[in-house]
Image (cartoon, rainbow, N blue to C red; front, side):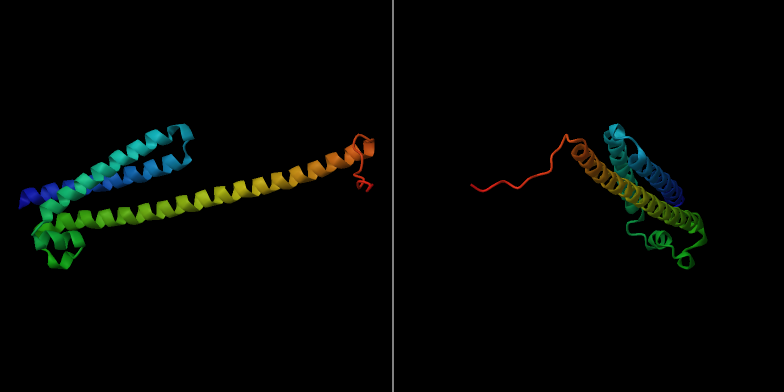
Length: 155
């Protein structure tokens, strides 16, 4: 049983590290130049594969052991003292996931703000472009380069 607890604690720590790397890679991917997109996506796929492997191993260790499953569920009152390290790692992992979710939300807000800023710039450029076009046409008309449209004569 001790071997399983030690291995389970190690796997939980690996899962936490993978989640932290996943979030860092996600943020890097969103704010990196397009040229690095393929590399970042490949690295995220590799991280996802590692995470799935760790999850499968955790599932295999806890299969059929209600006590370990209770420790992973965070039911610290229902577990023996020997599983306290597992429960501690689970609580640490949950806190980490909460922080990562907050980070994801703030990154989404930051992206939305950048998007809104770009849309405002585009609207300003379009308005400026339309005004410049009107000014240019008026200047051409005033200089005699451009003639006002005269309706065609009917024959």
